[in-house]
Image (cartoon, rainbow, N blue to C red; front, side, top):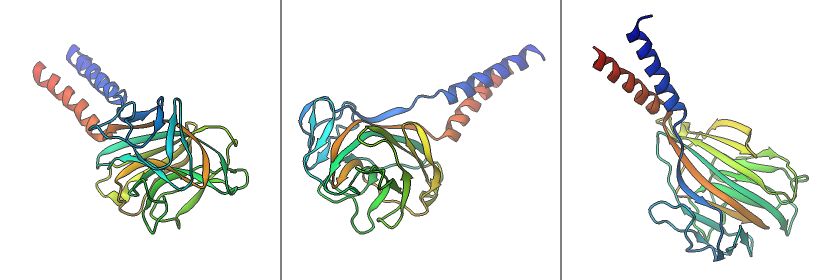
Length: 243
């Protein structure tokens, strides 16, 4: 193998490593380390100056808490084609009027004064239960409550990290996929949405449960194929310079 071939091979390896190690960009992040009404407050990291819109949610200096059930807290977000988004929230629904009551987290077009499930408006969401040894956590990959699917049961009265990975790299929105994780473990593998979602917000809410949420984040990485093209471009540039 001559020197030129070695250098090109090395450039290709470096380019591929650069693609693999491209860090995610943070769109939103909040650890709720302030005291007061969540509504109108600014996340720790925000985009375009966006603030929370919420009803009956507040912060106690370390987490967000709800003082009444059935209301949302959300912030503007609309996914675009060609990205991979990861959203995470630590949730601990530890009380409720009924054992089946739940918290919600995910993507929706419901405003802060709305219920999470109205007509066909819910989309790409995860729901931990207050008593999930009797009523398993669930998720919905589509509009309305008809697509509810069991996620499983996890230790009660303990905060768990719930994550959704939305892959929008397919040119057709109905073929976007959502993957669901609990405490970093994939519970539901990437599944095609099968419909074109209408998403205006990311947020959380309560369906009767009370408790706490913390460590909210939304990050994004560019389309993997685009990154690979950037790496190949670097190799091609080196080849032209050596020619």
